[in-house]
Image (tube, one colour):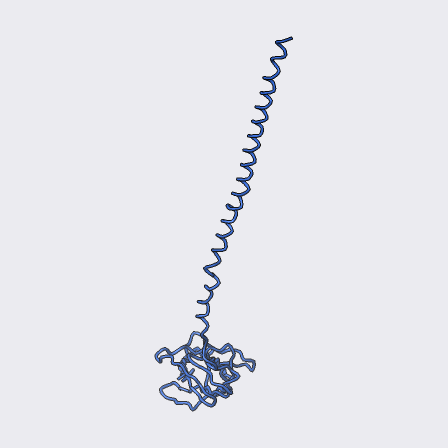
Length: 213
């Protein structure tokens, strides 16, 4: 009986030790949780500051160089159109089997326009605008110059026409006139004339034209 009563106090000491250990573990766990809670916001704030720094260089300011191509042609500085031009043949100059006739382009519009380069010229006939022979070749012996035509101003392109009778293969067909494209124009003007004989042989270079001058 004496021995059994003396063994109970050590059991109480053991339970106290367990409680102390559990309390320590809980305390450490609590400290760890608190550290995690406090450290996580600090780490999360840093990334938010870095994205805000990237827009700060204002890449939107880069488009300013696109304003450099803004300069445009001066007002009214445009190619003369068919609707703004009258196209006529001037007085011919004949000699040595050829005739030189000026093609006159006159600005009949209400604005200043530009003209430069070669016109396109060909004989047409058959009463329906059918081209006869080869179109006029370009005479490159004369330099191309720029012309700004005010209303009423005019320029001319000399057209050299060789006599078709100089060639055995030209035939006897008669032309109704000339189809003339002003320089840099996709629209043509018909100028009626029967004064010049065409050549039906497209291999014959019957005409040559100089640029507007």
